[in-house]
Length: 137
Image (cartoon, rainbow, N blue to C red; front, side, top):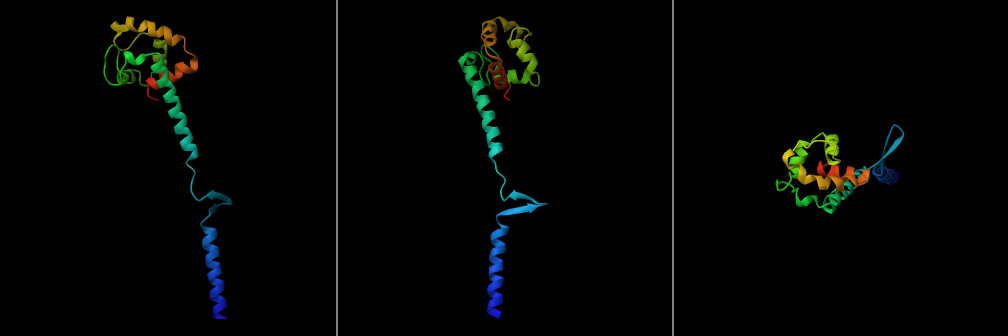
């Protein structure tokens, strides 16, 4: 009889352990044992893709010839652009389409006019991706 009790208790313990490790139930909702990181990874990948597309537009238009990451060369650095246009995306857009005044080095504006014409030819989506890249969004 004792042998049967121990055998039954052993089987019940194994079943309890096996079933308690797979899912947790909270108010009749089953939750996975581990939360999936897939949506977070997908969002990160989408952000990275948009940044890379903006960077590719920056390179295609040869903006890097005048705008370095940290150094002010012919034009202001990307760092300086980000500082001046922080939370002012609309003003940057207006400047890049030739309808706004430059906030940085206005005396150097004439050097930028050919590039403004190139920016105007971009699609609205490309313009936004380039601005997102410039502002490091």
